[in-house]
Length: 112
Image 1 (cartoon, helix red, strand yellow):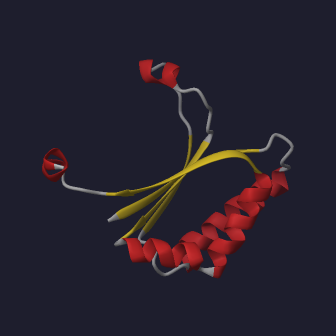
Image 2: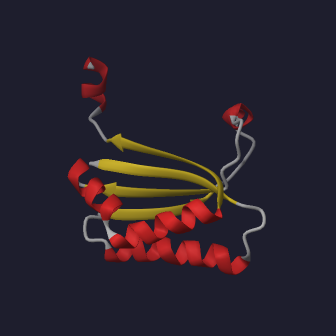
Image 3: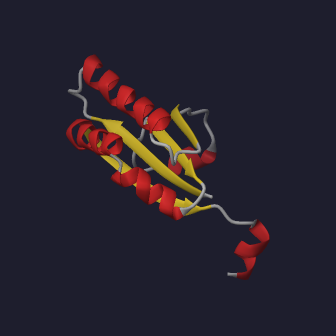
């Protein structure tokens, strides 16, 4: 399994309709791109944990997209519905981080 993780912060001047367009595009990508196995969008929760003090950037939102394999992620990234999503992100985001992770068995991770 491969997970595409996106942490993001919309621009302060993004309007409510701008934000809705971005979340609508996320929903369309999640539902209409066939290689997506699971799609989650979340809002950051803070609760006073010690690790919160280590964060140098605030990302109020996260998207996590799961795929069976790397080829499925690559198909998602090249899909026209994702291209539309990418256009909105580059226009409306102040900052973002994007990472891709292969989910591995913890026992295998120890041997790497």
